[in-house]
Image 1 (tube, rainbow over the protein chains, first blue to last red):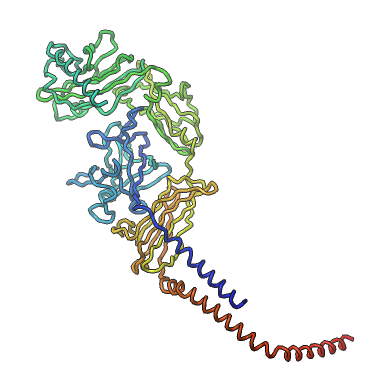
Image 2: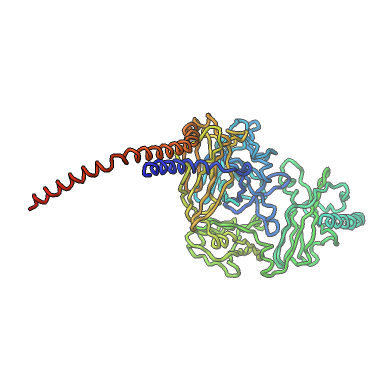
Length: 176
Length: 418
């Protein structure tokens, strides 16, 4: 009997070895949507909202706070993200028109954007965290950062002088 | 609500038009009185401004004509005139009780009364153009119950410096040199304690140093300029942070393993598991990559995809898990570099994994296992039977022989001892 018991225990260990890889092959759910909603507000406490289809930053009081736009984020690479609003249906893009560089809202679905192609680079922002605040540099327009004006109700835009005192480039960025 | 609003607007339009025809003058600003200049019908209606102004009684109200900012701010266009009137009531005349006036195109009401609530229409016009916009004003009773409605929620993070801002001060700060702003916590004036207030700028920022956790959540700033302006900032974040303090920790990656064995053509799920300890789930991002591109971009058909993100807690420790699902595994996967990436503000880590083919040995192993078991059992039985048969014949002889030898050696041993 001793001869029989020995291969049997080997067999059990063999089966046990096979077992984890078999259990790992469990059925999966639906295709995941990696978009995550974040709250964004600048260091001067201005939140984002839409005015005439333009993204502006300012102060929202009491019942007006429902106008606040959350930012929909899809990570591309470790430090790069796609930014959108309205459930990812409007995306933030850096657009070069002649010598002018500006921030534009484009009607594309954030989850449809292919992150590797060059023409979609304008939607990509490089996220840098420093302490509790975050800055967003455009990948297509290097040196240009997402910013707000000091004054309230002014458009959210891009600046190439992030240290300038009249522009705010530091944001609080927390998952909603 | 919408129909009610439309009805109200319709009613107000009917009531206003006769007023215009009879030549009642609206509030005027700028260079001329122009209440009668352009009929309301020829003015482009820009609808209602998206923000409602909320004030408490006794406060000063300054309503800015939203479209006037662009008109008057643009240097190229000729300066227009701004007129104001309250919808659905008699035109508020400036100077009657001195409470309401127009200054630089803005409508001022001081002190505000609850009866001032309503919709105000501002009209900007020049010789060739005219447009009109409506603004809602609500003046609330001056009680603590009104605070949430007039507050500007502002969020500060615990353990970091930050500032609270008294918003919408620009109307008061115009050409002012002696603007004095004081900050209150609830009703208590904040003294300039060094650790709390570092700096107070003309933007009325209250800088809060992060070395202390504050238990209050209402700030009120008071502006001393002819009158008092109460500026409420509901510092919601501080309260929220105290209730459920979001802590960030450096995540520890528990899986995937360096190599994963799988058979070609089968489904495979590789979990990426991260231990966060007491850290919050929400601040940590977790995703998979294939050869430095995202899974979505690399496998657009979805053969390889990320499973749903699982967030769970075990023994007060938080974990996040995102599986990578192969359906099925193909030869190409064996040469692909898969990595799981975890990122939060404290750390950025990745763990590489490769898929190793174990198809042949595994399937043969599974097929051979019961067969070999049967052979072993049969072989065992056969061996045992054969063995018993042989040993049965020689049993008596061998025992006799060995028994004799044993006795002999035993007796010799005894002799030696003696």
